[in-house]
Length: 248
Ligand code: SAH
Image (tube, rainbow, N blue to C red; front, side, top):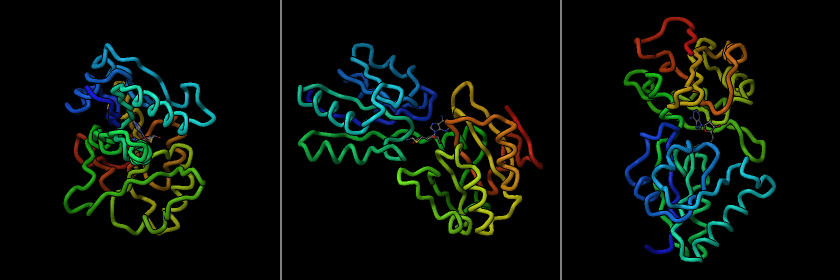
């Protein structure tokens, strides 16, 4: 066993959606640094490891990223096998690339392990096929929240002809809605808002572009949730849903 940092995606929540490679890395780990959004149930695969919570609730609110970098480096330099466990996929809005580059630049061996990203899992769990043939010619993963408070080109996205999967959108519903309506996306475009995807407490709120803010409010939509915007968002397990439906 050699010093190494594995940057591992833990998937969206359901522990059965872990990859075999993630399970192997956990089995080899001596130190596991775990993010808030990771389901702690996956820790059954690393009973002997020291587990360190490093999410925002882990007590490192001021300089979390620098703190996490230094902690990974310290353990790797002690010769430990470190697993950095992140929700979903480590490289989809997960800083996996940044962390890998930072560690590699300091001579640490790094391996990235894919996880199933929440946007893809959430759609599938609700019976939505994001690139359904003849309906959507692609899918765009986009975050509504950026560190510098800039926002995506909603108007360009409205014209992209792809299904939009929006991460970190719960606090930005109005901006998403206004940007897409201004970009010419039809007010009746279906929207699915999926909370706690793949977990037993998963809930979905079906709406459309013009009603999404009001519907999210009466539904009590909370983070973590993803938004699926596009014609495919009217699909469900029972075929294409008619009108607006709420299912909890
Ligand atoms: N790397 C992660 C994303 C981290 S950003 C991934 O690939 O999934 C955090 C955002 O991901 C949340 O604000 C939410 O939009 C989404 N998210 C993460 N887990 C989720 C879940 N179980 N259900 C719905 N959305 C989730």
